[in-house]
Image 1 (cartoon, rainbow, N blue to C red):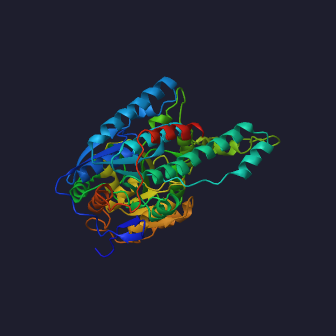
Image 2 (cartoon, rainbow, N blue to C red):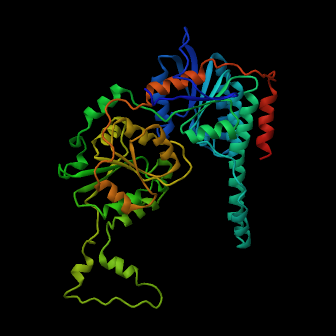
Image 3 (cartoon, one colour):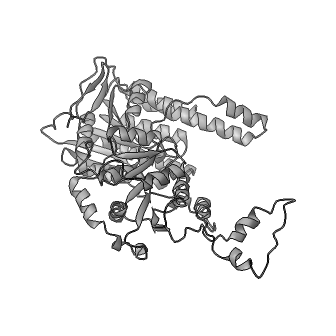
Length: 484
C-alpha cells in the first residue's frame, strides 16, 4: 500500500519503519496493563488488542481495578497502592510491558496517578506507553486566576490553581520520568495522531515514538457486523417507516458529545429523518434521588418534548414587569395546551446501552453516523474508528482529534464546524461526499499489530546509556509527587 507509512522517531530523527520488525523466533511475553472495566472505552480497545497481538506475543492483560484506584478514601488508597505493587512484582516475568494510559484509570488525585505510573515504569523490563490522552505542558492561567481573585471567588481561584498543578504534574513530570528511564532501558510511546507524534518526540523528548489510529475490527468481524445489520432486530424501530433515513450517534450521553447539535439540526431536516441515540447516561453520573440528569433534560428541551406552546410563551413572559398572558378560552386554550409544533418526540429514539454486537449492528444499520463532539483535548475516539472500519458514512465536527484521525483515512470523513447545526443538516441532506469503501482501510488491525510489534520488540539500543540505580527511582517518584 503506497499510502501506508509507519513513523518512528529516533535520536537521529524520524524514519520509516516499513511495517515493523519481523516477529522473533520465540513469541515473547507481553504484559498489557489496562482497565477492563466495560464503562471505559479503553477496555474495548484492550480486548481487541489482545486478539490482534495473540499471534505475535504471549499476551497477559493486567486489570487496573477502578473501584480501588478511583477511591479517595485513605484506607482504600493504600489497598490500591498494594494492588499496583502486586502487578509490578509480576512484571519481571515478561519480556515487555505495554501501559494503556488514560491518566484517570490510575487514580483521581494527581499525586496518586504519578506515583503509581512511576512504579509501573520502573518495574517494566521494556516499556511502551500508549497515550490515549497526551497532556501538554500548560501555561499558567494568570488572567483567569486574577479575575477570580478580583471577584473574591476564592473557591474558583483554588480550583484554577489546583487544575494547573495537576496538569503540570501529569505532563512535565511524566515526560521527565520517561526521559530519565530511557537512558538505561527501552522506552517507546504509541500515540494516535501525527500531531501527538511530534508532541511526544519533541516536547516529551521520547526517543522512540510510533503513531497509529485506533483499530478494532478484522475483516471477518466487519463482515459479521454487516451481516447482522438489520433494523428489524431493534424493536424500538418497528414503528419507523422502512424508507426513513436513520442518523446514528454513539456512546455515553455526555455534554462533550454535542448531542444538542444533532437535535437542533433535526428541526431543519425532513420528517422522514430520525435520530437514533445508542448509549445512555454513564453509571458514574447516576446520582441519588435525582429525577433526571440535567444534560438529558436539556436534550429533551431542545427537542420540545413535553412542551406546549403555552409553556414556551409563559416561560418567556414571567420576568418582572412583563405583560401577562390572557387566554381566549373559546379559541386559544386547545391550541396553547396541545403538543408543541416543533416536538421531535416521534423522531428521536433512545436505543439504550447495548452490548458490543448490537452496538456494531446498530452502527452498520444507520444511513449516516454523526460525531458532533466538542473540543475537549482528546486524541482518539473508539466509535469513529469502528464506524470507519464498517464503511459507514461519517460526518464529524472539526475537532483536533477527528482532523488528526482523517489524516490517516483520506476521503472518509465529512466535516462541519462545532455547534453549527444548520451546516450539519445541509451535510446530511447532501449526497454522500465520498464513496463507500470496500475491504479494510489502509490503517487497520494488521498495521496496528505491526506497530505494537515494533514498539515492544527489541529496538536498536541508544548509543548513550547510564547505569540503572535500583530502589532510588521509586523514592524519587514519592518525593516528586509529594511536592506537587
